[in-house]
Image 1 (cartoon, rainbow, N blue to C red):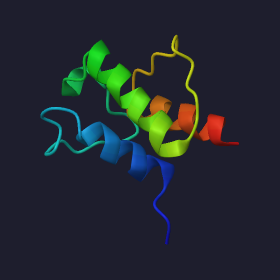
Image 2 (image 1 turned 30 degrees about the vertical axis):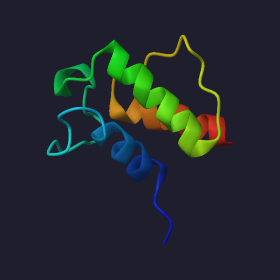
Image 3 (image 1 turned 180 degrees about the vertical axis):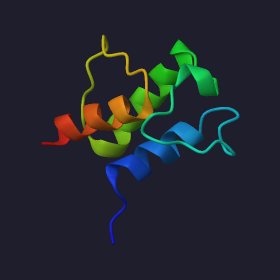
Image 4 (image 1 turned 90 degrees about the vertical axis):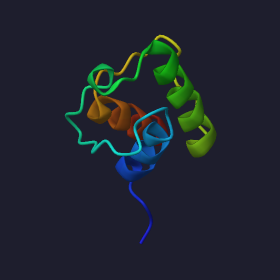
Length: 76
């Protein structure tokens, strides 16, 4: 079975410094787990490469769920 968008986004987010052991849910606040704006931008760029999409540079997802929804919307 193919990985869900949620699983793929979480894998990308976990590649950021120090998130390997953090359990991510849709409600996880990115800043609360240590993703600053630079790390979020890096994760956005990694998602663009992974999914072959272009994310609005002004987008600023606050939670994992918002991040996943943003990617899903662009994939449609």
